[in-house]
Image 1 (cartoon, rainbow, N blue to C red):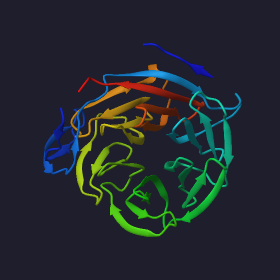
Image 2 (cartoon, rainbow, N blue to C red):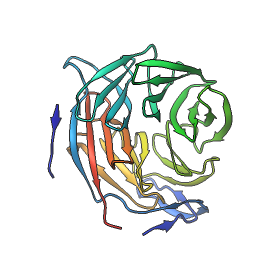
Image 3 (tube, one colour):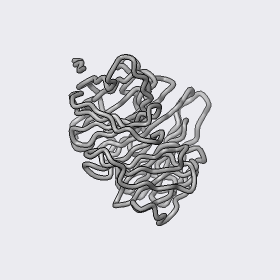
Length: 297
């Protein structure tokens, strides 16, 4: 089902984010970020398509993460232990049944994904073209957020460290995390972005904290992704919103809310090639593709 709806480059400075209970964050001198990022938040986010990824009305899905690979959308269905795969326009919908409860997902290549299974302490490497598990990696602890970069997997272990490993599971190095409650991560250029339930953190690839963003109360951040200009997007499960934070951590907006169809949003992914944001509600089978509009630079 498809529904349509109408509707200056800066250097990251030295600062520390300190949080007041009732006020937005305040920034002070802290640590240098050794990367250049742009500050160009989207001025509008317009719905391109709404998709129903359920095969039947009586299905009960729990969608925990998603990615977009070309015209293929892949969703992890935690409750039913399967991947849901469909085309951008909701066609050619099929499932890959598995023996594990899937949670976080990352693209390895155009036909391969890696999925973390928290309670099973397992990472699955899956060929989505054939539907087969090509490799199973056992981890030393509970494995959460996962990201693939430069031929290596970056995996959150026990919410407090990252294991950098090759596709055989050999651990190459360990990265400390800025919180002991980290759920999701993504790598963007030379930055590591991660979240706990209340905050977004931007770090170097060796774990040095560049900045932290926290805003307001009632936060329940679930997933994080970055766009082609270094902005960070996170779903807030409690408030039915998506928040976008500039790459230097100094500006933010809530471009998507409940009025855009969000109802307990969890999964989120930004397609940098096509400048499309994919968001999915945790339950109900609704996924959304959004186009972003920015000010000309």
